[in-house]
Image (cartoon, rainbow, N blue to C red; front, side):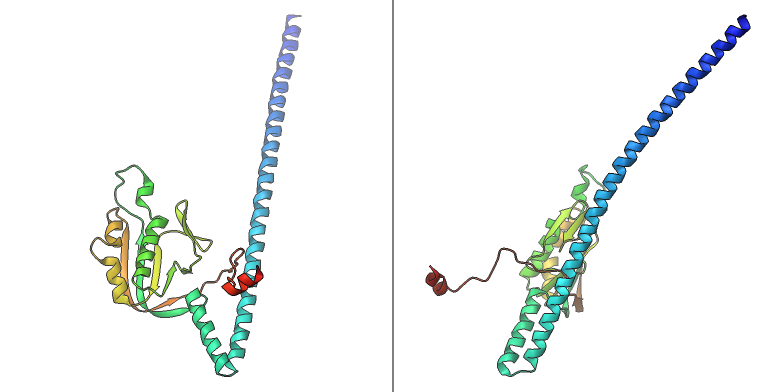
Amino acid sequence: MKMRKRGELAVVVVCAVVGFLLTAQLRTVRQTAATDDTSAARLETLQKLYNESLDKNEGLEQQLTQLQNELAAYREQAGSAGSAEEALKNEIEALEVSAGLTDLEGPGVTVVMTDSTAVNVTGDEADYIIHDSDIMSVINELRSAGAEAISLNGERIMATSEIRCTGAVVTVNGRRHAAPYVIMAIGDSATLYNALTMRNGVVDVLGQWGITVKVTANDQLFLPKYDGAIDFRYAHTALPEQEVEGGE
């Protein structure tokens, strides 16, 4: 009789343990399913945003190609006409150069900027990496020294180009670039070189933080044209003063 009760008790214990294990397993399965659903939803959202970005970039590239084809057609027509049209063609080419819409080559300097390798004594890593302000100080110095065209890591710098920090990298013309940063500038190579390397100049200041700035004079540089889209949503050509008064 005692053996039977012990057997029944053992069966009850086993059933209780099995029930507990099944309950725990079911709870784990439910939690895993919920996590999978959340991850799937997040993945779907990210994929949608990625696809939208691809579609936008593709549309901008198509717009740029169309505008370049139209410009080539205008140039061809101007080249086959008379002196007035020839003057217009030359003006278009000059505007392309100043707007950064054509490849350029010529003498100048190459500036390579590398993050600091000095021992961190401030405790802040941001003090030892290159920031957008550091890059802008170099570019502004080059412009002041007469640089006619400038590029950063292959990106043509235009009047509308943004240079800003996004985490540990820098965004220019909507594209992200990491150090080292290579700046190329076309102009009088001796003047540009001296402007950057003069005593207490921008190279000396950046060197105080251990940021390496190597400046090299070049006989010939190649700067690619700007390959993005140009879209003015708010700015438009101002009307002559007389037309504005007449419209009132």
